[in-house]
Structure formats: C-alpha cells, structure tokens
Image (cartoon, rainbow over all chains, first blue to last red; front, side, top):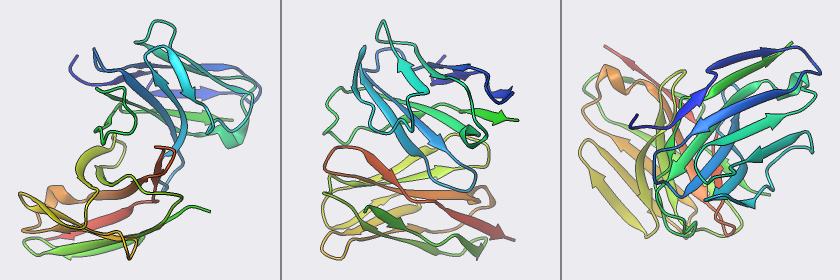
Length: 117
Length: 109
C-alpha cells in the first residue's frame, strides 16, 4: 500500500489484558513515531525510532508500555496489564528522513482505537 | 511547562474565510506544523513554518510570528469538505512534536 497502515483498527480489551498494536510504515521511511490521542485532544508523543533504534521513549507513560521495531520497518506497541486510562487512539506516523531535526512531514496511519473495559 | 493554545471550536459559512489562531509556549522552537484531521481519520499535513511570515498554498495560508509565539491558519473559499479539526503542533528543542488539542471547524451552507 501507499500509506501507513495499522492493525487492528479497533481493539477491546479487558482490564489487565495485554495488547499488541501493529504499524506498517511507508516503505523506505526511516523514522517512525507512536502517539496516543485521547478523545478531543491532540496526539501526545510516546516514542520515536530511527530505523531499528529506539532513540526516544520519553513519552511512554509507564513501564507497561513497550515498543519495538526489530528490522527497521514494522513496529509493534505493546501494552501490558491494560488499565482503563489506556483507552485512546494510538497513532503511528512515519517520515522519510532520519534526521529528526529536519522539518520532515509525518505521514499518519488511521490509528488503533483501544477501549479497555 | 509546554503549552499550545487554540480555540476549541469555530463555525464559518461555505465560501467565506476563516482564521484559526494558535499560541505556543515551548522549550525551544524548531518549526510549527498545521495538520487537518477529519473525524475518525489520521491527521494529514497542511503546512510547516519556521521563519516569520506568511506561507501560501492554494486556499490555505499559514502565518508565523516567533517573537509573539503565534501562528494562524487561514482558509479561503471554504468548502463543506473543510469541516474537520485543525491541529497546531510545535517541534520543540528536543525535536518532539508538541500538539494542541485541535480546533473543530464547522462549515455551514
């Protein structure tokens, strides 16, 4: 496909359950970002990868959140022991360049809407 | 703390012009982005400003004043499809994008 894809689009989890959210960036894009977006709010940064290296994970809200991009393409965001406050849309974005200082346009996926009951 | 302020909601008429303001207070500044987000969809890039002044791109223009910590997005000849949320985001000194909560724009016929 031409754009960023994410799966699943919707996920309902029981409190305490582990979930894994997948992101397929645009082929060849070096940078990959994960964001959390609550209803009616702007996205909030979670973590950033340059190829397979996780260069910034300062936005991850707790040690229950873990992200990886082992081969520098597909990325997975894992949330362990989900809590109700984890309910949000999780957006993945990719950009072509690896230089985070450059004003690279970020291309967003459609997001995964996670609801924790 | 870091803060991005923009109005929660605006209403405008089809064919008219609307200006959406954004003020920011961030630790450092490496540029300001405007994104459009339709309900339930991903944000899509509209503009990037790093120098003071106006950038025009078709019906959309974006203005920046770094000394005032202020930007606006100007939409001309409004169309019904422009109904969406408009997100202002600043690239801070750590090259993290700090996002505003978005302005929901409602276009009426």
